[in-house]
Image (cartoon, rainbow, N blue to C red):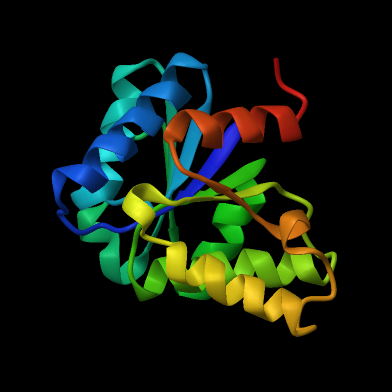
Length: 179
């Protein structure tokens, strides 16, 4: 299974890095492939290290202005022209998506896949890994959107909120008929 992970390339506190590492290790042990932004820095490096050290594959999609930060030795590394092409390639290569903690770029990536799903243009399962309650506010906003009629589909059809890495992977494997 190819799992796209959207997440930060920033160096973050242990309460964020520990779950990212755990998720990477679960992917690798399960024989899965990480599809990610290709960076060898911050949280992106943490999850990629976990995957690689546990036997999984790494497929990176970087972008020209960040190519100098791309991970050397990934099984595959594509350099996109711009951020729009990068997002399209990441989603094209993935069977499912996990959104981990991140900033505006991560939020942009997350909302794009949800918008595609909302309009029936993507059918990939999407998980928001709500590490340390990071996405509690976003979940509340999504619920308000649903309650007030802004979402034409039930929120549960668009995204699953997981509290732990093991729950995120279990959801994806069930949604994709694995195991």
